[in-house]
Length: 455
Ligand code: MN
Ligand code: MN
Image (tube, rainbow, N blue to C red; front, side, top):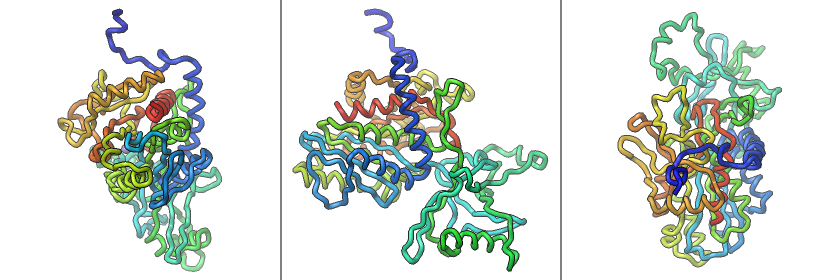
């Protein structure tokens, strides 16, 4: 055997793939950027994903409906969580090819009594959502997204700041001239949670000379709501910036919320493109991963079992057998090696940018605590599947041992007796308001999902 056969060496997609594959990756990125801009919240991601699926012949499914071979269906769970599945020709007892990604992302949620004025400005009080670094969210343009449910039964969509003629929103920061004491604080304490107040106006109304009242009058004009309607609203501030190419060579994509739409888009588009698979395949776009996967749309919900049970009932299968034979890709991002912060990475086992899709055997922290640890057999099987389509992939671990850590939904799926492994895209500046990924990594993740559904 030659040296190059004996030694495993990580190589980039640019070294391994053809020029056509790189071109295809750049083309694929165009669709992904559009998805990013139209899907900044889980509700918007569900809407956009349904619109895409319907173009590929998917129809709405309701719990209790009959299901038959050849069906292409989606289940919209409360507008924030989406199940899509295709029913293959082989017995359902052969199991399901399952992929899961989350469509929620770190952001700044509004409190239920948000509006006040002080010092000549009106603000919204907030409670941040997910693991943010608070100092990154001040002094940056923000857009307001969400819904307001009124007591008379209306559900009002809100989206302000995405059109270039829209106003934007903003969180104030301290000027350096007066920031000497603040600058001495640890990074995590420089900006406090209760300082993340969103600037929403500064002009009083003409009758009462009240800035708060003026904002309420404008909200009433635009949406027909009163202040108490905000009690039943889900509104959040997200970065207003659009997804854009990064770098002279345009090889990277900058955007808010790559985590985890950079996995949601590949698992979704691969399912839409998998027309000829004999397997029953399912793609889940989950909510609430960033806060622990709770709630009816999070992966700790038993809805996944309800749907598997319904597939078994309609197709003559045994739910326990289906789960035992199912295979899952828990699709979530990984941290790419960053030479600017090399001290937290162990280079041999950290995902490298542009080296393809990342398979992570285990996550967790402090001695692999809280992890689904994918089996050697399952990874061996995956290697054979990925090799069939020459998918370029790498193994990866999140940073150095005992440097921190993190979890994914993998453990909430594998607890149902389903073989599961983490697959994803390496990200630079994960959880920042603007994150960066490599186009070729996104495309190899898509190709990995295509192979997974097919073989
Ligand atoms: Mn994630
Ligand atoms: Mn995350």
